[in-house]
Image (cartoon, rainbow, N blue to C red):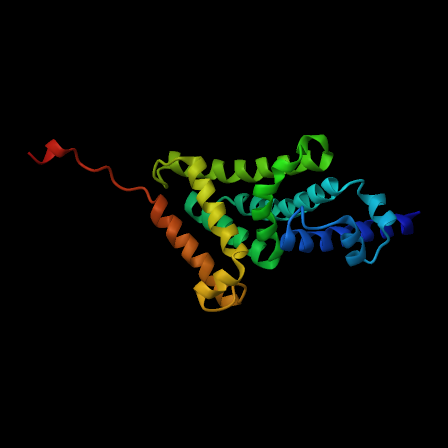
Length: 221
């Protein structure tokens, strides 16, 4: 029985792995279940043993991707560092998560436009996706608000800053040939990843830096 369970788990992981790569390249609409089964080296009936529909499989892939990222970001936020240092850790963790799994960024970018095709609440996997998104957004939002209260960051619109932080990382790694043309080299080289971290941190340090209150116009006499 243990061997059967291990094989089932191995097959499921293989399905998710190949489906992630396929969905990242062509999106939800561009990939069929037969293609996933063939890429995973399984019969179609074996695929349907694990996932009853294409929607269920797609949502399971999204949850897997978001889970990897959320766990990395959660660990970065768990430190007792000051807000600015914690934001650096969070940025490094996000960039590393996307650089180590290059398909993730393109998959997530596609998902922003494709998830309106189905109701995620109909599936346990969809509910898990929603929970991962909420966890990810809540973690960085709390950090930003903590920094604003402490005077480490300027007062800003937390939702807009979160959009900018996440978008800056996801778009970069999803940009493919255009990104490599702009950079003049590969997106995923060690040097490019280090530079991406440094530039993002410098950009957000400057953009979020708390500044001394300016004197009122009448104070100069």
